[in-house]
Image 1 (cartoon, rainbow, N blue to C red):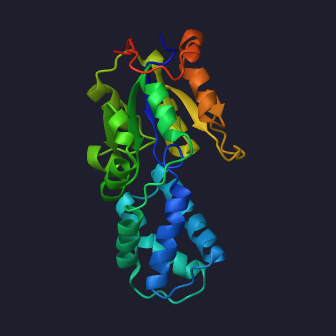
Image 2 (tube, rainbow, N blue to C red):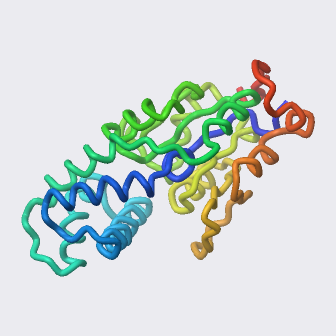
Amino acid sequence: MAIYTCVLLDVDNTLLDFDAAERQALTDMLTEYDLPHDAAACETYHAVNRELWDALAKGQLTRKRLFQVRFSRFMQAVGVPDNGKGAAMNDRYEELLSTHADLLPGALTALEELGEVATLAIVSNGSISVQEPRIAASGIDRFMDGIYISEKIGAAKPSAKFFEYALRDLGITNRRRVLVVGDDLLADIKGGINAGLDTCWVNFKNQENNTGIQPKYTVTSFEELYRIVMEPEELENLGVRNRRHSNEAL
């Protein structure tokens, strides 16, 4: 029986390659609007966007406001006049982003293995219009017992309410066997901690943690995650399919 029999998984840069999707969608949209779209411009957007999403996680602005201002702030940051089309640019960017469902290497195999021993569910702060098409196109939905998107349930990570909703909907009561897995320290890890759940930081890029937020575990590969979730005898059966997990998290 697994050490963790319920695993709550973030999507972007945990299962899907959001950086690749963002880069392509952003480049295409900026090109359409005849705005700077070289590597430096994309890095500037990334910094502006990261600052806004961190502010959202801290409760300093709303999702609606984030989508209203991020491209206006980008134009200001790259030193071009605000064209007054920031909201339309955001809509077009989101539309393009929804068409990119790039899987991280090994993600499907990881879900196959973890799904043999645990209940799996997606926990995402992304918008419905972007995340639902990407989740479906990638094929990760077939491994999930639940898909929870903040815009749909009315709460966002790192709020404990977000995780409480997911656990209640899944029928999970044994919180000691629940693991929150994600790449975002401020949203995923802080959220799991707020909900009193064990957390695992997916640090595939070997980034420095200078937030003061301390996950229980840190992994740099899916194989390391197996060793956290699974008992030794389950690790010996990697690759064996149609095992029936016993969910003591219920």
